[in-house]
Image (cartoon, rainbow, N blue to C red; front, top):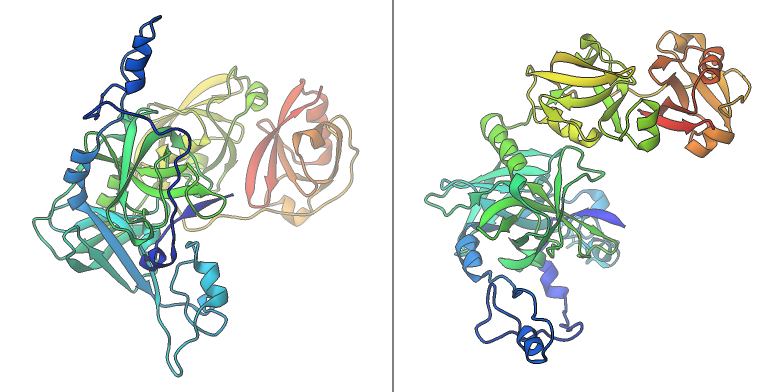
Length: 492
């Protein structure tokens, strides 16, 4: 199972066959059935006597919506130089992106290069929609990533060479520009007003079939995906396939509420779960790309994790709400303001923080230099700080390693202290063996235990002392690879 970002080749349609199958009985509708039209089954039920049927149920009619929205939806094709790794077994270039379900086929069976030539370049494609009459178009960053040439085809079949104004890989949003005027645009909606169960449609170019319409409902909101921590995705059951990437997700009012970006798939095709980037986030990115050609985000300088019930109990919370600070980065606004590991951030700039993903999104939505009020829980007491945010850096620091022995004790770990040169950089003890309560909690050999709750562990004896006086539940701050996380442990 995998998350797929799709950039679709127009050639895919040429090698696909389709079979239409009805699953179950075909529903019957009364003559002229449209939005809100009663089902024939309802009338039949009424003639049988007994309890009157419930209020009429119907399906929406999308025809007017599609007619109004389609002219502002575009088909995007991109070409790029094929790297050596993308060449087929005979030296031929593979004319598809790695995201394409046809990539592996062409990698194994692709045609040879013409003698003495460089071979064809890779072609990929997707969708987009016009956001200004002078030719600004929004799409996914992965649709135009690394492209040497981008071409936009309008609904009236006119084609234009496009310039990439900017692309933000973090949110997967790109802004491109074509030299055209008086173009139709789509109205931007408010994703915050979307409701789960609400009808939405997608217009795009799956497998190169331009202006294809698919419909479904909103399945969930604010989904966090492994590769999109700053994006509260809109989940739908709208059919999304290669080539829909970058196209609009519209509500029944004809407003764009999202940009179709990813699917959840076991085989590379649609399986009932698709995800769209909320358009308000995309428009914020678009404005920054238009002004500066890049996106800047605020930085607090903490590593955070969400709480489960055990962690919440360890930190004195009744419910697992908030973002638990598991790491404070040196020289950051968080460190200068006095935040500590073990603090639970409950509010940010007036917003209630539900989990770590929400905090990341709230911080990223701010600009460097913005001052924000942060509410947090420390030692069972709510406290507040006013913090000026910094800017997101390019890289992060990695973890430490090293060891010396101690007993397993109540916690169930044998630990070794860090060498003296590493102790100067930060406290901690390394887990050499694990059993009992620690093993059940998921502590692993090689983990570096940095703290118990909010209290730092400078030595094996300090860890033993803290565990001996701890209640039934504790939270261990652990360094694992390049991340710091709190692990709840039930000591019994």
